[in-house]
Image (cartoon, rainbow, N blue to C red; front, top):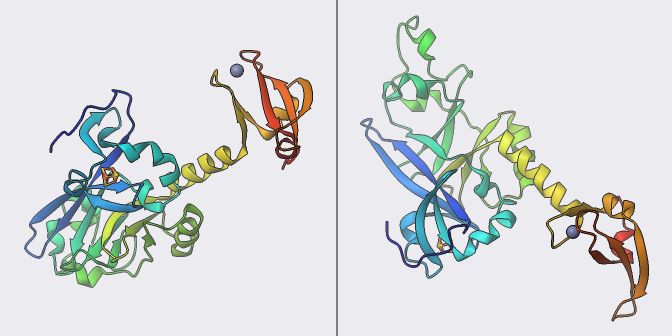
Length: 265
Ligand code: SF4
Ligand SMILES: [Zn+2]
């Protein structure tokens, strides 16, 4: 991996994810992927490295990530399912032998099944009748299913560009807590967990409720804004009315158009 320029140490990074695919002979191929907020799609890291916005690959507390000029847009990108996928996804080709899965992998809740072009064709879902036996029960099962094809379940995937509400609706209809994420060509690019989705919905809701951010770092929701001491009202440049209230943290006077401030849910 290469480095083009050195951004500041605090520069945000886009998390790098792995996709491991087990092939017909049990061989594994691993791809390094990143969700690009600018293109709203998952790309191979090698594609990023040719982008003029690419700065470098660096390891942060959360793991390896791509630092680039678009990383600051990550928050808005989180409104796409593709940005919320977990850090690793294991896929199997439909003709892969089931005994290529190790004991830990047999405990995975959902394993996407892909064709020769890594396009989604279904999933092996733990607990479903056709899923491979777990490591505990395997010893009691006299005969294995010969290939993944026999354990295929038609679990509905989410599109990486699906909004978080659409993704949540699809996940609810599938009744699974993890669902595969696919791109426009139906290639599997990740796995989405319900916890990541719910956390994103909560963050989006909090962000929509923010009325004002003070330069000192204090944040006020619409309701909190209404509870700040009113300093006064004045006419704005466009004939609108502005409300002036004091920040409780630094006592600066903050200004918000009255029409926005009165729009309390
Ligand atoms: S370097 Fe950034 S902007 Fe360029 S393709 Fe990669 S994620 Fe997207
Ligand atoms: Zn303040």
